[in-house]
Length: 116
Ligand code: HEC
Image (cartoon, rainbow, N blue to C red; front, side, top):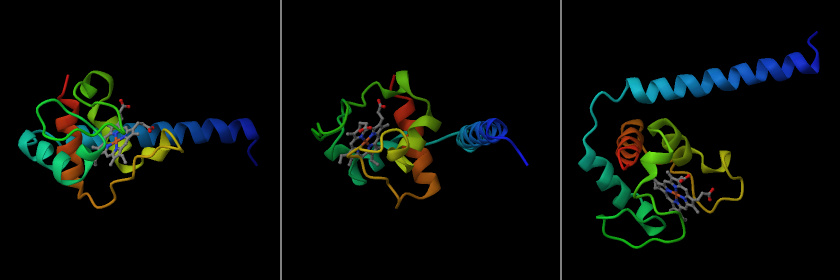
């Protein structure tokens, strides 16, 4: 039997391993991503209705301006936010983008991460 402390440590190690593998998966799977595709998805997947990015038509203000989001977040962190916004903030108004294909999620998050 494991003690509560051991279980917390093991849980932490699993969470870390998951985060690292997710980060490497995004980084490794993205040697080249067409930035036009990410920008396009940002418009077609409804992100513009809440978020502003300079140079992209749309004036969403419900969410933060993402024109420099790449200064704050990596592509992996952005991908996590898109897939599961409630992980960071359980009360967020941002909906999880469940209809994105893996390649679309990658294109979108790599493009956003490039906005410095
Ligand atoms: C209904 C409004 C809404 C929609 C639609 C929406 N978001 Fe958000 N988003 C938010 C809000 C509000 C936040 C602020 C964080 C929070 O609430 O926890 C946020 C946060 C984020 C962040 C983190 C910003 C930071 O600085 O931490 C990213 C990245 C992001 N959204 C990307 C997207 C993308 C990409 C899409 C489209 C697939 C999208 N959002 C769709 C409302 C929205």
